[in-house]
Image (cartoon, rainbow, N blue to C red; front, side):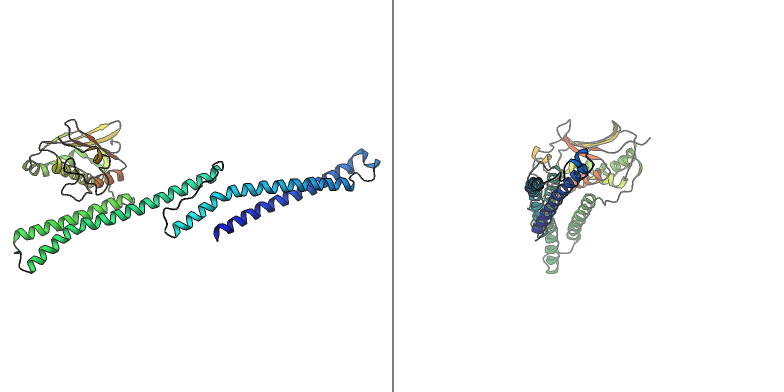
Length: 353
């Protein structure tokens, strides 16, 4: 077994060092006294400076010192071995699939060993969290895919059986379900690529004022039909971003406001503050409840009817926003707006001259 082999090796090494040190002290002392005696002025006055009794006494004292040193070495070796054995055992359990395994730090006076065990435990905890998240993700994704697939299958089977007429309305409903699946797949792809650090960004200098104005022109009529008024307060700033991804972020935030906010004004503001480009999207309420706000950017996060997230969506809109902004090296946060609604604040890089 690896642990027992490690114990034997360390104990044998410590014992060998102790014995070698004792023998070195013994013969070194004898040699030193011999040289001193040979060159001393009183070496001619006696035939034997070191009698047999003296030799035996020296050997006894060195032997006692050797035993004490061996005991101290064994005790020190066990203090070192305890966390290492626990570490090796934990590594074997994790290899066998038990991600709950943890190592025991033992004596915290051994600073480097204790830090090694703490790092190992942190790694094991992260592996366990990742496995748990993956299981949750798989279950949630399966749930999200099942609904549109079930509708598609039921509608198509109904058309085959003659229950539904394949008219324009029915076909349009099927296309909407396909669009929902496509959006879910694309959102999953974006979040996964961003979390793994492989989200493709085409950074270039962009005047965000122009991009936001163009997007607002596309959405303005549709928002008015839903009872919303889009208000823009934009400064002329130049920043290095992926324009398409920023439009995706704005579209997700505006869509989120359309789903939950009361009919009224959706305000988009852009300005440079403290050497950062700040983009805000705010509505007139009701905003997010405190329990939802704490995890608003987590994937598949939904709430109740009041202040819920992704109503009618797939639960990934705000997590996509977070993934894209963090891939730009920025941050996004939620806060109540001045009018009692939701306000999402995005901090991007430095404005370009």
